[in-house]
Image 1 (cartoon, rainbow, N blue to C red):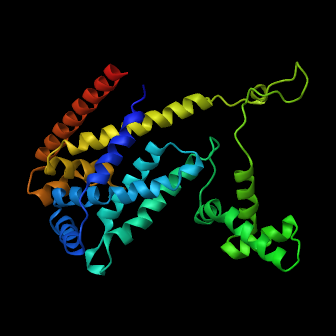
Image 2: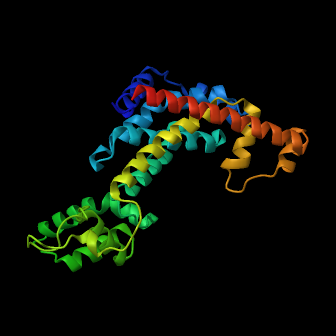
Image 3: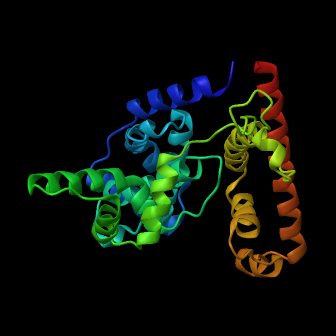
Length: 291
């Protein structure tokens, strides 16, 4: 039985039992994380708002994505919000977090809408989630005026309404109206018709491998999070600065900040990687035993 069958249910139950933070407590936790990097405060803040993340994730189930994956993406958005939240701005964390959670889920839905990967610009994202609604609205308004819009007029009006180029509207209509077809389908109705896959020269991974890879990547991401959480504060800081930053820091700069030699930082980094490797191996064995 797949591991996914239990994780979203367990997470939902825990989220529903989490405390409700008042504004004063929320602000205190936010300051503790921002100013002191208090991980206990961060954990408490994120746990308290997991119910918000799960609630938002459930609103995107109609796009066909597994609920467990939606919850994972919502959780990542919540963690990004907590990391970037500035309590001095005078807004509630929940108000700020909504944007990050929604953005994370929307990016995931668009990436997985089709096995065929296409660009996902801000205008395409706006169209993906609003095109059908805007189209229906414009058609209703035209009908109330006794007008009939042809496809060309409707596309122009949608582009104006959403504020995107006409070409993006035309492309998004194709993405939303089309579906994924098997490459083993025949090109004609004849019994001996050639399959579409026979016309391709691409040696890349097949669809099943792509889906399995995405599924495995999701589990590996969770394992990595658990592995990182098993490090102490200094080890986690070194791993984050060395491997998780867009511009990784040098051993020398970390040594200067921590008051350690370059060699000592290298040793701590190696020890942290050893802990993470053992954690990943343990989790892998547990999953194989479970399956």
